[in-house]
Image (tube, rainbow, N blue to C red; front, side):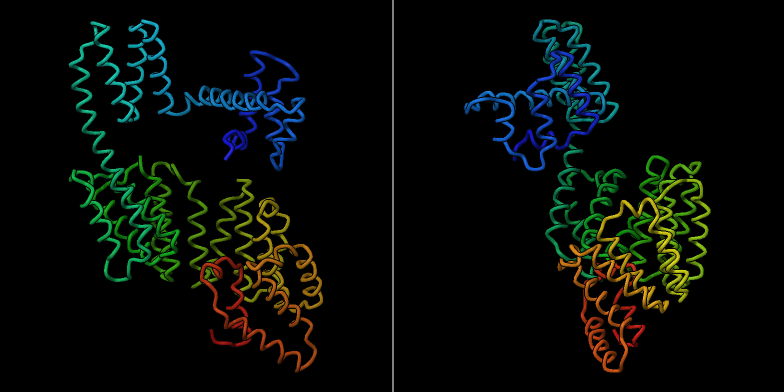
Length: 488
C-alpha cells in the first residue's frame, strides 16, 4: 500500500483547498511541485509513477521525486493534525501534552504546568483515563522542577485514576473476547440459550470486577456488539430473543433516560424488524406503537430521526396482514412528510404504494405509482441494481394489467438499459424472469403455453436464499406460484 496515495484519496474537497492555502501561505508559486504532485495523484484513475515523474522532473534520477513524495506526506500529516486538533477530545489532550513537552525542553516549567492542567481538565471532562495516566505521570515528574506542584496530590489522583483505567481495560478485554467468541461460534441453537451462556461465560472468564456486568455502559456495549453480529448473520430468531431480554432488562433497571434515548429507540427498531422477519406481525406492530409513543418523549427530541423507521414498521407488517391499513399508513406518512422536501421519503411511499396496490390487484394504480417513481430525485441517485429490480417489478405489473404490447417494448428497453448487469450471474434470476414474462406476453398457442409452464415450474421450484428473495420488490417465485397455482 502506498500511504501517500491512500491519504490523498481520503482527502475531502475542503481539506484539499485548505491544504493548498496553507502551503501557499509560506511560499506561493504556480509551479509548486508538491501541489502539482497532489493534483496528479487526485486526478489519476490509475496511479502511474513514471508518468508523474516525467511530468515533474527531467532525467532518470528519482531521488528528488522520492523526497518530494516524502515531504508531501509529512506536510499533509502536519496540516491534518493541526486542522483536527480541536475537533477530537483525544487530539486536544495530545496537543496540550505536545505543548508542555516543547516548553519543558525550553526550561519553562510554569508554562508546561499550565498546559498539563488544561490536559487534565479535558481528560476528566471526557473520562479519558489512559491519557490522564500520562498527564499525572508528567505532573509528578515536573514536581521535581516546580516547587508549587505537590506530587502527593497527583500520586493520589493517579492511583484513583488507575482503578478506573483498569476497570475500563477490563471492560474492553471482555468485549474483545466476546466479539471473537461470537464470530467464532457460527450458531447458538434455538432453545438451549447458547448465546446467553456464551455471554455469561465470557464475562465470568474475563471480568474480575463484579461491578462491570452491572454497569449500564457495559451492558449497552454488549447490546451493540451482539445485535450487530446477529444482524450480520441474519439470525433473527436469536436477535428477537436477545432484544426482548435486553430491552426488558434496561426497563427493569430503569436505565433508560434522556441521555440514552437514542439507544432505546434503536432497540425498539431492532425488535420490530426481528419480529417481522420471524413473521410475528402482531407483536411487531405492538412494539412499533411503543416506538411511536417513545418518539414523542423529551419534546420529540428524536422524532424526525425515527419517523421513517416508525412508518416502515407499519407498512412492512400491514403489507402481510392488512393491505388496506398498510395503504392508510402510507397516506398518513405522505401527509406527515409533506413540505419536508425529502426525496427518499417520497421514494419509499411511491414504491410501497405500487407494491400494495399490486397485491390488491389494482394493477393500473400500481403502474401509475411506479411511473411517478421514475421522476423522483432519489430514484435518479439509486444504485443500478435496485433500478433493475424496480424495472422487473414494473414488467410484472404491466403484464398483470394485460398491456402485452407495452410489456414487450418495456422488456426490450430493460434488456438494453441493464445489459451489463443482466450478463452477470448475480442477476440470472432477473434475466430468466424477463424471458418468462416476454414469452407469456407473446404466447399464441397451446404448445407455447405448455413450454412456458415447464419453464415457470422449474423457476418456481428452484430454491434461493431468503436474503435474495428479500431483495426483490415483488418476490418472483411467489408471484408465479400464485398466478399459475404451483405449490412452493
